[in-house]
Length: 281
Image: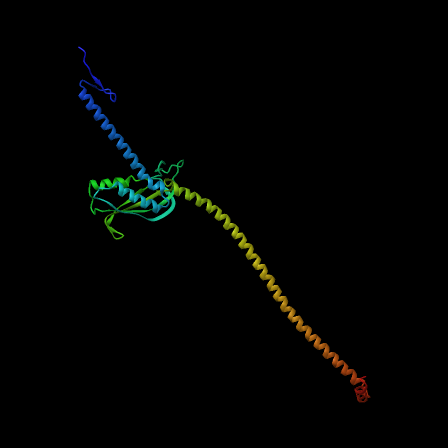
């Protein structure tokens, strides 16, 4: 007796009845669609949580975008994120002993043949949840979002109270590590800054040379001016001496003439003068 069976093209499973086979096909397709939807959701979620760092034009821009995305993904959760704040930020070399840029290795043992730090920002991250006590699963959900958010790396810290910056809730603060490698636009900006800094240093060096040359020229001009002033003053002294000499010469001449006249008087002077007035001698 020949028995008809139905074989699943998806799993290879055999079914004696067509009804069971069709039910299997329907269930498989439903599970497959659900799986595809879940993969698509995961892909969209990954795209969404990486968007803040990939599009950030500043650290504050990243902070605001991260805050918005976390609240978007946390929608429907009674325990909400009220504040995400970065403070005391400083750009420096950030150790990769406990964290590292995305796609890079940590170096907890400070091995010499591996990087021990990367450029980035260190500071403090302050978080405020709306529930002022641990809300269980609701808290776990939002903490998972923050704990795995790309580019946000936290270290030591913990509970800080029930109010911060006038906002009441469950306040937490931790050491914050942000690596430049995780922010493409900021990395480009940093490279431009380095190039401009090199150009600025070269320009500043040229300016310093010009300023030194100007200062030397000013000193030389001042020296010549002083020399000129000294010579001008000396010239005045010489002119005064010349005037005195001329005066003395005139006086001597007058005295000499008088002396000569006295030594050899012109006896007919009065008559001569009288006649001169007549004849203009």
